Structure formats: structure tokens, C-alpha cells
Image (tube, rainbow, N blue to C red; front, side, top):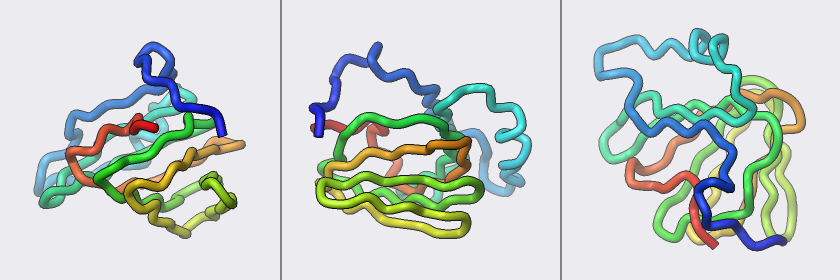
Length: 130
């Protein structure tokens, strides 16, 4: 497992941490997916209590990392997502989800264009650390 990079210029991801939809607003995921032109797109959709729901439109791979204080939940809407762990890989299909507990080193991969929802605390740094 390679070491994670810590230089932000080494993260070729379109990560938008602004909250796109306010409470009492319809969250239009299909419109965002249709507009997406990035290979690795992450947009915060809304805040629910102390957590956020994020949309990922992904193709390619993310770097190895972990989150020391936060769990992450991934739920596949379209395509399939591979989550590599130290000792195994999990292949999530449409309508399947998986929790990566805090402190677990992992990376995500999407061989084909994949759409996922992620639920995590609002304080999480998406690029993590190692």
C-alpha cells in the first residue's frame, strides 16, 4: 500500500464542500450527475444534524487514506465501487452500501463511471490522512 500524498496539488479531484441544497429543498441528484464532466467529483448535497450527504460521480481511483475521527458510509446509485482495505477489496453494486470505520486505511476505485452517496460528519476532511 503506497503512502498517501499530503500536497493538495496532488489531489486531482473536484471536491465541493459547500452545501448545495438547503433544508426544505428538493435534492436534484440526476441534474448534478448530468452536468458532471469531472472524473472524480464530490459535492456536498445537504447537512443533516452533524453529518453531510455527499454525491460522488467517480471514475478512476482515489489515494490511500484514513479518517482518524470519522466513519464513512458509501451507497452506490449507479455503476459499482471498489473499496480497497489492507486485507481485502469490497465490490459494491447498485443499491449496496458499506461503512469504513474511523482509523481504517482505505481507497476507493471506480473502473467505470459510478454514482455514489456518501454520509459522513460535516467536519471530515475528504482527502484524509495516513
